[in-house]
Image (cartoon, rainbow, N blue to C red; front, top):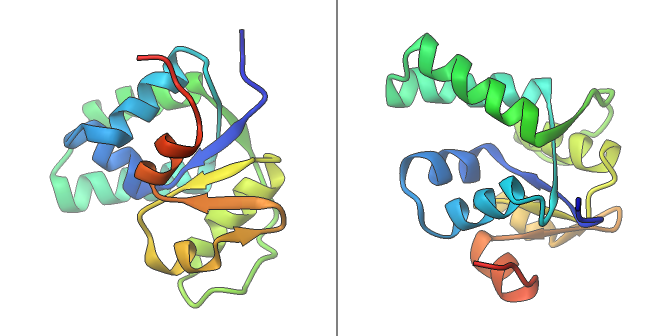
Length: 138
């Protein structure tokens, strides 16, 4: 059964889940178990691919496999580029996808996004606070 709680994992959280584990991986596993509905956009998937290739030397093959997994796990949205409230342009793309995807929560480690706390009824939380706020099965 799919949860009605819709979440968007920021790129930094997905990278942490894939490479380092911890709370981000616990959240990703909860998404795999359909405890939450995950939302993303093609723009965010492209950003993820760029970061993994440039900073972590991911091969094209590894990136393609991860991209396919994420597309299966997530609802894919195509929001218009209409939000310009933050100085960091990619952060605005996160907000757009969350609003378009009718998310309950954005999960991020990004300080500028976290400073907002809430945007158009979308809560913005760290992975740690998310896990303290929402119940998941282990």
